[in-house]
Length: 278
Image 1: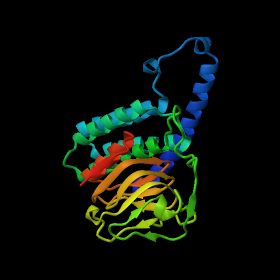
Image 2 (image 1 turned 135 degrees about the vertical axis):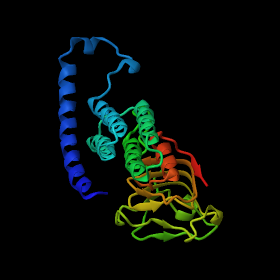
Image 3 (image 1 turned 180 degrees about the vertical axis):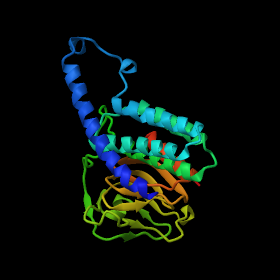
Image 4 (image 1 turned 60 degrees about the vertical axis):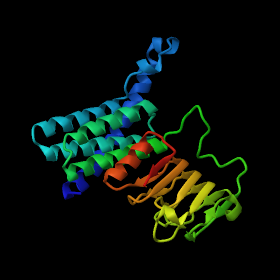
């Protein structure tokens, strides 16, 4: 990332968080002063777009205009601003409904297609896509159970160091002697489970029917089934991937800026729980 971006983006992010906080207070005050708000029922389709979502869309529209005028550096900065808006929304815990993610992905795809052979520009769009996936990971369906709540029949197993898994080994409640793998004592960047170095699905390493919390985990080369990650730093290294009913709650993602990474980030942003990449 250029030096100017490393300096300006954090400053921009701080300003965005302040602006989003002000907009939230302003919206609440406006709603409380509106008599119709307490008596009328507004359908979801008629609900106004949140100011921060409008800012996100405007930033990508500005990127398109900059591309049309040949100002690619300005377009990259506009995409970075859109990515910062997503990050600020996640940090602020702003309400985000599923339809927004589909709209945002369509907008990112449109902008990316305007520079299809530009790897540098694709990297900027890819980072925005990952931030969108992280925003989705922070969203919890208010109509459903909170996935961050421990299982009702909680049997925690706490570890303070990585655990190796051999080829053809299955790790589940029976082998773990518990269903909740607590790795919060480990450093944020420490790998929780270590499969064979080949990182191939042919090794038949399986992890299933458990919840994992904290630390970090590389997803490649393991068959994951009925697993929930909570507050984990997930890595994907463009290898073979097999996720079957896997959920991510308040997770961060390290995803490469390539076609495979874009597929995974898109699936995560859409809230898909079953993803296969070979």
